[in-house]
Length: 355
Image 1 (cartoon, one colour):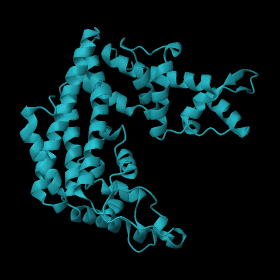
Image 2 (cartoon, helix red, strand yellow; image 1 turned 90 degrees about the horizontal axis):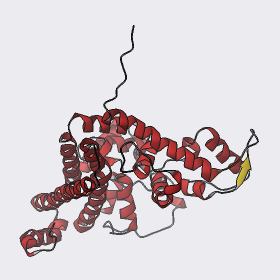
Image 3 (spheres, helix red, strand yellow; image 1 turned 45 degrees about the vertical axis):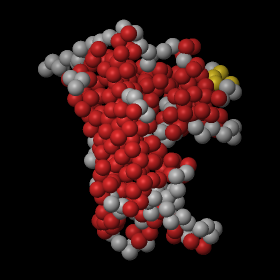
Image 4 (cartoon, one colour; image 1 turned 180 degrees about the vertical axis):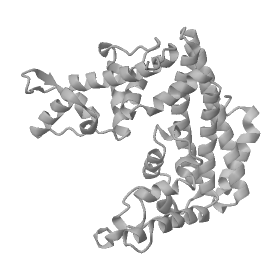
């Protein structure tokens, strides 16, 4: 992409100047800055698409329709999330956003703490949102890996999304029965309007990435769009398992013995997605987990499940380990996802039921 080259000097210098002007909250400066950053996001996503396609074509991956879909789903989308998180972080920090506005609109931490002020230690609050780990974590929560699976203008930064946030963070006045739920929504959206131009800027950053992903999907044709429609309907557990265990061979899932290097990233993503083992595991795997919990063994996430090698006997008399059962469960989830996708690529569809 020639980043840092002399050919980009005019673009970069303008972005530097605009970035310094963002705290003034001049709408024109914000619009121009967002245009420059959005342009780079789109360019990045197209470069990622082209490079991954060239690599997989050299590997002989066919059919092309499937390979192109894989590139968007597991290459472009992941890069879009990473790039957008970084752009949003830089934009909020550079704009010197009001802490009060940011917390009211987007901060998920401690929504009920202000109801019990006497229990809270006296801490001097910063007037401006700091560019620290807390901001990074908040943006990560707002932009999970599945952020683009739901088409919504502005995404989690949009004005309309304040309706969804009101359900989880209705606010002090609603909790004290001092306003109705519609009033809470109106208040949130009025706050979003009052915080412009930076709220509008964040929403437009999301739109730029979302529109580029949508345009790449539109270019895939019917098979690619059908595959994506099927895939987003699968449980998130199945989708993550498929992402990490699929191979270059169409419809194939890596063998358990060959997947050792894939488990750390897979388990970490399951935990980051908030998927709870106790609510997801079924059958023998669930019984094994419950048996270990009854022995007061602490297991709260997928990484702890995989680390558990203690042998335990169930009612059928068989001895099992949680690691083995969880491994089976994740492999089966990946295979189920692969089976649904293979229906698209192989052209196989269910025959209409005869009457």
